[in-house]
Amino acid sequence: MTQLVPRAVARARTLSAVGDLPHALLYAALGAATAGYLDQAGPQAAEGLQIARETGQETLAAALLAALAKVAALRGEEEECRSRARESLAMAIPRRLGLAVALASEALGLLDLSLGRPEEALHRFQTIATAEPGAGHPFVAMTTTSYLVEAAVRSDHRDVAERVAAQFSARAQHAAAGQLAIAAYCRALAGSLPSAGGGSDGIDQTDADFEEALRLLTVPMPFWRARIELSYGEHLRRARRRREARRHLRTALETFADLGITPWAARASTELRASGETARPRNLDGIEQLTPQELQIADFVSRGASNPDIAAQLFISRRTVEYHLRKVFQKLSISSRGELVQLRAPSASSDLRINAD
Image 1 (cartoon, helix red, strand yellow):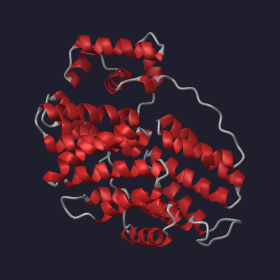
Image 2 (cartoon, rainbow, N blue to C red):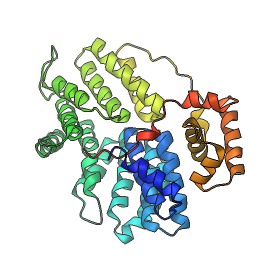
Image 3 (cartoon, rainbow, N blue to C red):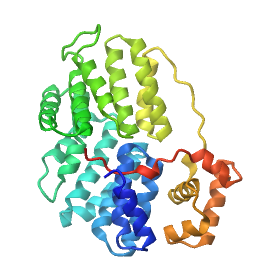
Image 4 (cartoon, helix red, strand yellow):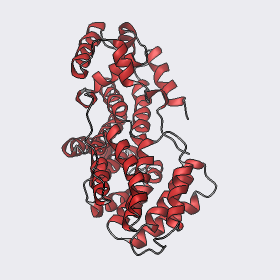
């Protein structure tokens, strides 16, 4: 699936297939959000939602609302997340749209987990894992397994964490590297419980599982890699191996901050301070000030598209493109397309997808 989703989006734009474009944008947005590329996921989901509503595709609209809720959850925008999720569920539950229900529930679970409400998060992810058809989706249940384990660990439900990690590892034995990485991460999370055994000196089994998860995660999934680094750093700090912990915590903090995943960045910063190191303040480059459409236009420009090309791709006028581009230049304090290319490179949007390995 490496290139299928971006190719589908590009083909729908080229053919002006307005009816197909929201479907392609949904999967592009979900892939981007899962990887952590929120500045790509937000504009894609917002554009898809607008077109889905204009073309009367309510099933897609419900799923795209849930995708926007997930983006908001990762950014720590509680009210936005809850509003989008409520709207999605109001459409999806009566129609038994399992994918939208599962995605909206995932967003709310991520919000709870990131804001320090692990019991609530655990309940949501357990519900996703056991949902019947029409009330959930098996793919979402699979991709949220590590969140379920993390919520169980943070709410001190050892039995749940160990059982789910063992079940997932058994199912993933003959799977591709991506699934094996998730399985190793789940085992590491379960093994990182303070009294779960393992020594504090040398490399114990939990260390080995964390290292395996990092080794096997070879696809570009910066959010997932940063989550593993953060959990590994937390484990090492609790084991009083502070110097080792700092390296992983520093990497996690930098990645979360770069991606705009604020709640996890705050958590990594707290852990880093607890390890004895103070995180340096970061300068924002203005990207966070851009609206979803401004972000989308900035990304097209960074990939060499002309204003007429952008207008055709987004089904808007050239004048609208010019207006938004002026706003982008103002907000980023730049004056040329070349500066924008340098600022946005390298772009993550050329390879956005859901990775089901």
